[in-house]
Image 1 (tube, rainbow, N blue to C red):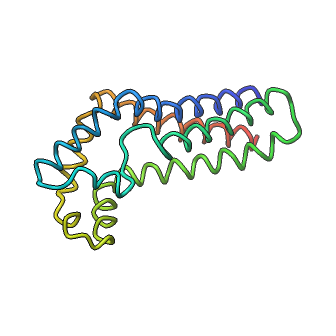
Image 2: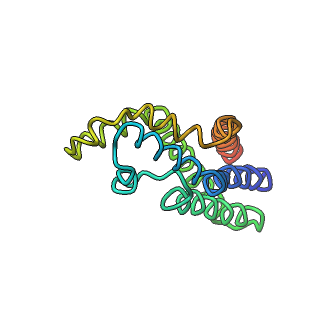
Length: 171
């Protein structure tokens, strides 16, 4: 059973690592597309950096998924070595990963509204006039179409593997 749980944890780790890999490869193109859209709207292109918006593998888009993958790999190792800590950590780690993925999915689904609200909180009139939906669509166009399928496959893997690992841990 521990080998099965470890396999689920490692599959989730690989799924999380896909995020910085894709952003490292295509993030510059997405950023350039976003900058072009901002220029088209007559907005300074520096607003992305000024407000912490990134489409590349910098910042939390790298350290968070890599950190999650490292914790999952460590927990998988504990499972494979038969550590007494594995049982409790399976519940904690997989439960937290499931919850984190819920937040990621929510963030993906509400990105336009969230960015619009964040810009409004700044009180900058230039930010207030940005067509956020067009900006995000332009950035999205910088990634290959298959990234949408990868993103959804990642959610399926994370939710499915976490549920299977938690079910196995309960047994």
